[in-house]
Length: 395
Ligand SMILES: C[S@@+](CC[C@H](N)C(=O)[O-])C[C@H]1O[C@@H](n2cnc3c(N)ncnc32)[C@H](O)[C@@H]1O
Image (cartoon, rainbow, N blue to C red):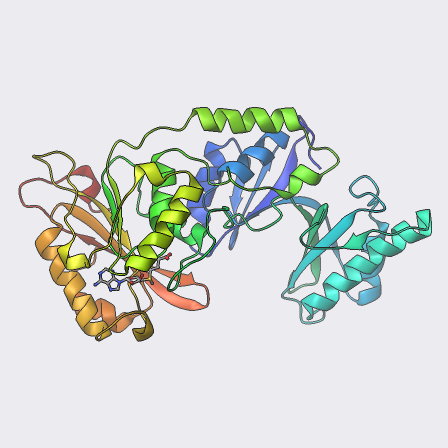
C-alpha cells in the first residue's frame, strides 16, 4: 500500500478508446511517468494521488496498485509464488478477501479457477502461521485483489484500491430503457471536448446518465463524492488526508455557467433521470423536459448567439422506440438541421442503418464499444451561417 510519500506504480483501467483522455485526467491529477496501454494507463504516484484519482477520475474504471509480477508456467508455480507474498501487512487474519482474476493465457484459461487458487494460497499462508483464516466476501471485502495473466503466462498481482468499479458513482438506482455506463458517458463528453463552457443538451436522455455526467463536469463536481472506496478499509487508511482531499474537491465546485438540458419523450424515464440527478447532487443545475426531440427548443449561449453541444444516445433497437429506426434517425437529421444551428451534435449508436438515415455529413467518426455492442460515435457540425464558434472548428 502506498505511503504518503512513497511512490507506487498504478495501473488504471478504462474502456478501449478512452486511454488518451484518461491519461490527460491522470496527468492533471499529478500522476507521473504516465504510459498508455490497451484499456489501461500506467503511472506513478503517492497516497495523495491514489485518493485523488479514485475521487476525481471520470474515465477510469479501477485504480490498481501494482504489487508484484512473476511468470507462472503451471499451477504449482502460480500457487507457490502467490503464497510467497507476505499477506499479513495487508489483511487481518479474520478479515474479508475478494479476488478478481482475468486471463489471456492458453495454459491458465479459467479465471474462476485462478481466483480460487489465489484465495487458497492466501488462506493457507494465514492458516499455517496463525491457525486462523480470512473469509471470502465481495460486499464486505477489506482487501480486493486483482490477478491478471497475459498470453505469455506473465502474472501481475495488484490491490484494487477502488473496490467496486468507478462507474458505480452511487447515483443510479432504477433505470429505464438501456442506460449507458457512467464511465462511457463521461468519456463521450470528454472526447467531444465538453467542459461546461457552452450550453449542453441530451434530447433523448433516458435515465439521465449523459446529462448527469455533463452536469458533474460543468460543476467541477467529483464523480466519486457519493460512494465508498476499497482503500477506506485498508490498514494504512489516512482519514485526515482523505477528508482534506474531499473538502478541497467540495470547495472547487461551481454553478455551471450555461444551461444543461435533459429531455426524453417518455415521462417515466424523465422522472427516473430526476431521481438520479438529485442523488448525484446536480439536479439544481439541470432543466428536465418530457418532449419529443422535434419539439424541444435549443438553449442559446446569449440572446444573440446560438450554439452549444448536443450529445445523445438514440434507441438503436426497435423495442426501445416506436415506428422504424430509419424514420427515427431521419427525424433526428431533419431536426438537427432545422432547429439546432450553431450546435456541435454527437450521436452514439449501434445502428449503421440509422446513421445513414440521418442524412448529414459527419466530421468525425469514432469506433467504440457499448458493452458487447460495436458502436459509432459521430459528430455533426451544424453551421449557423452567421457565426463560427470555437466549438465548431474542424480538427
Ligand atoms: C438508448 S435510450 C437512452 C439511454 C440513456 N443514454 C441512459 O443512459 O439512460 C434512448 C431514449 O430515447 C428516447 N426517445 C425515443 N424516441 C424519442 C424522441 N422522438 N424524442 C425524444 N426521446 C426519444 C427513449 O424514450 C429512450 O429513453
